[in-house]
Length: 510
Image 1: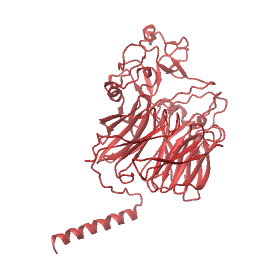
Image 2: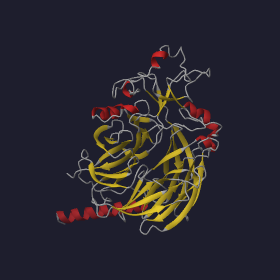
Image 3: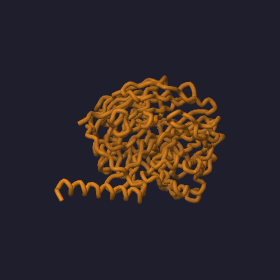
Image 4: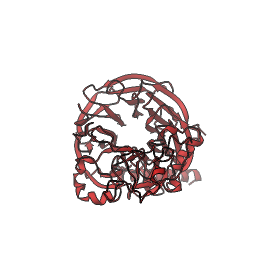
């Protein structure tokens, strides 16, 4: 047998073995060819303007039809359909309208199907997930889910559609729907199972002690929970859902159809040098990071699942979000007369309350009065101003990209100092993807209109890669693998809420 014959035989045996493995384990990851690309060279290669503010919020791309579906709340409840088949030339094909629904929140695509998350006729009522064929946009199924389905996604195997139903209250806070998670079984005529958090009522005290926020007026545990964003493990067995206002992540068993646990995220200690913040927009200094006696709730929005070194992780975009309604508003400035600092805990309270110090900072008046005497013993601010990485199984913090992230923006001259007193760069979104064999986290910052890229191949030690500009207020990030993109190159799609544009970024080939 010649050496060439031996090599060919070995390759055949390997291929047969891999095929057998995939038959035995249909969830086995597909080995993808690495496309040589420069991870530091992402730049805008195309753009389409779809209207004004709120015309571009979240997008989903279908490789089979090369169509992009974009959520729009600009003058109605809509999905714009964009043709990418002649990329970088982009053409708006049509618009799907849903006038009977009070808002649209999310879209997702899998294997020729499009799922759309719609509010009900009123936002506090049950919402809908509508499933269409991407080829001809015909309706396959309409499924009723919980109130305000804020994010919808498919499991990687396509067997499930998962909807995070936020269940926000009405403006007066007289109606507060139950927050829930809906699991739709696509292989069983789209049967739906909607889960809530009633079963965790007995664990309330222990979870609060670990950093969970439960505080809505007259709300039960289940009413207070507000699911926000979903990530699904590659084997399609578990989903992870951010509970933004509650400062936690929920784990969901998709196969059993149950919520298995809540992982509170605790706080970020701003008195530590590695967590320094700029807290004032009136101090005459742009991007002056410093330490302060503050504890910050992470309050994550977007979430992305990834694996590295044999372990599984969740990347969290710690935007921060408060309950600021006409009927109940937790926000207050430190300088407010209604926010009194305990003189024993804060002997320098008068100095801290100056506008050049903490006076302008937006904090929560719902937390910090630990002894119940009417003044505040601790200062709690909303939002981690960071992208954090936690262990998917335990919820343990692995890394936090915050100070370095904001300093990079400051050094680039892009920091918006007017936001120093409220969420800083405002980390809105994150998605983790493979580019040229590296695991990259793309971090969207709404208030500075930029994306930061970090190499998280070693999750405990994220490394800065690149910073580039987007449109106004980047809201949704979507990564398209090179094999699926219209021109065979990796692609980051950014939906910009502020100016209604969708922008496309790609790296240079090597």
